[in-house]
Length: 317
Image (cartoon, rainbow, N blue to C red; front, side):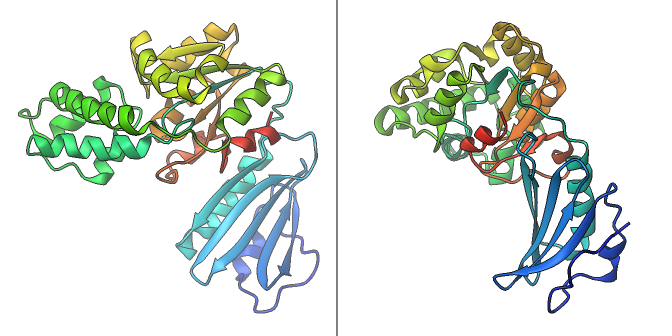
């Protein structure tokens, strides 16, 4: 039950409901810093859950590690619906309470490429929609987003459901590929902030790194080599190298095997729900760095750590 340390902040934004939270044996306090009301929940394993008010109708939750040797370090969740706040606080508490130390346990990190290492997801979104439009089909932004990291076996049923049997997925996909390739040949593709830094840092720590991308290896090299990233990987696995692409676990199972590690010894860095499902199903510790969209509630339970940027991995491993 709630054990209050300190005083209620002025204005008392929290209702009586939050005084009776199940805190996994922890304790908490309400504070006010720089005019912002916050609730701090301290857990017995050294983690702390922060809950703060951004605006009157919006809150945020952050789980961070207090002790130096804890390594599942933080997750963030913005909550616009005040009624859902209690559920999100409970979720953050239980996730932190059950977190496992990772430093020394994780010996390999497997990275997705698009949206994680290179800023290419926006291009996929743009050119999927342009390719569909060229054949008379309107692809919404939401539909285009749902195609991220999908193998053809997953994407084709979506096309059939959206457009019927008259839509030729392979023809539209080839048009999308050509449009995007022409654009990148002219303009290139940008690395995500911190990509080179984190790959080099992990190698310096003796952690093996692999690339697990739905894109063919030739395309991955075309994107990453000019950025000086491709040759940093100890192993590269493409969706064309496995029977079942994401969201099936095959690509992560293959990447771990190529690193000479079990998936339990590997962290996977993903940005999309399909990739998170793939990595989690394989048994990896999943780190999600959202790119175009935040994770939905059905994906969050599969995420071991929700990070903001690549260099956050320095605090994890």
